[in-house]
Amino acid sequence: MTVLGLDASRGGFSAAVRRDGRTAGEASLPGAVALEAGLGAVAEAMRAAGATAHDLDRIAVGIGPGSFTGTRIAISYAKSLAQGWQIPLCGVDSFDAIEAGAPNGTPILAVVRGRPGIVVLRLHAEGGIERSSGAVASALDALRGLRAGALTLVAGDAEDVLPALGERGLAVRVFPLAFSSPAQAIAQVAAQREPARSLHEIRADYGEPGA
Amino acid sequence: MRSRRGGPQGRHVGIRLCVQRADMVYHVRERIFAKTMERTFYTEAELLAFAGEIARELRRGDVIALSGPLGAGKTAFVRGVVAERLDVDPVSSPTFTFWHRYARDGRIPVDHLDFYRIDNPRDVRELGLEAAFDGDSIVLVEWWERAPELLPPVRWEVDIAGSGDQPRRLAVRRPDTA
Image 1: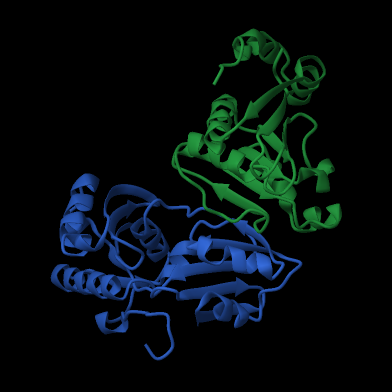
Image 2 (image 1 turned 90 degrees about the horizontal axis):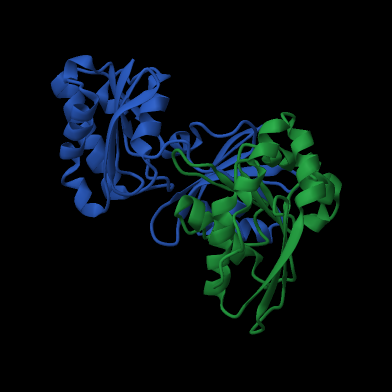
């Protein structure tokens, strides 16, 4: 299974080719200017992996939440490539990418930075999955599954929520992301999923209700 | 800053090679080679530099137990170690986080634990924090006195005295210094 992953939802633009569970080629560009050079990063990742469009089994794209503009641009690139190359496309949200390779156990709190002062949270607990967004305090308060007495695994933009978690008396374990770029994580997650039946199914997830 | 006298590692290579069982190595190292050294620092930069110096000697599985009052510089010491080992500047809030792992491709991860909020040592086990001591990483523990039995008997102990504008007096008990 060879997957090309693209992501611009979590800062900069990253592209990666994962082949049978290993990263074969990768390119990351930092900053907003990276968005315009994103296709160059795709070409570089493909070149580093020695891959052509014919080698790809699917394309994976980060659908957010995260950067509004970045997410839309990456999805546009990914849809164009998928249509042009006739390759199935798979959308992966930022939370699944953050959780990829996480230590075993729940609850897991994945944190994504949204607009300034806004976080988008997903809590994956025994009782199920909850999401919230907003200013840190209100977003945390909205998660009913967050409770003291358990060790909450936290990943993503964890620094944004750590003091507030401490104030709530929660025991926290912060773990680093298992992949060095979002594109790698997205490609890894997509390798274990069914791709979308239609390109129209892939939509940006802006993380905030009504957005 | 003065450099430490002598290089301790070379002298003990033979012992480590001779004694195969890890627990025996620990036993020997603890009984014979534990020694305390003391340093005084007048700035945080000096303390960070010293932490970096210690960091260069740490190996996978090493545990550093940090003690000292609030504001003494325990977290600064951790920052110095993490910066030296992983070339990153951790920004996590002290006394709020129980367990923070810092990692970077190909390097030994560093686990930072803080037991400040531990009221009962039993909490530590219930939370599964002992998994941090599996020997896979370098572990630094703040407020370790709140659950001392969780730490391996062989460990570095760093006690920091002083707070506010006072100079900091560090007492380092190292497990492998002759």
